[in-house]
Length: 87
Image (cartoon, rainbow, N blue to C red):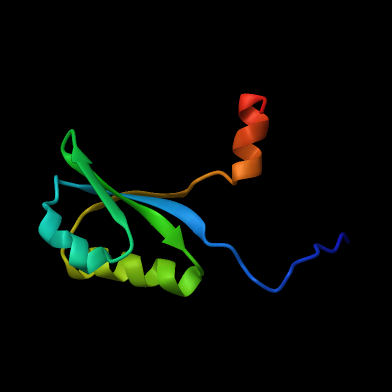
């Protein structure tokens, strides 16, 4: 089993949460620290998520607001993206 060295500090993972409907900017306060991008009948809520508890909190908020969840995806790590683009 390989052990991974860590500095004890976890970097947040950028998540993209997509919901049905084009949300207005009044929802920004419900998703503090996240970016909302609306278009084509859906809204992407994206931003850093530090742990699973925060992710579940965001998903609970989506549910509490009565929004229809379409997808939840982490963005690739920066190193993985650089390898894909050849940088």
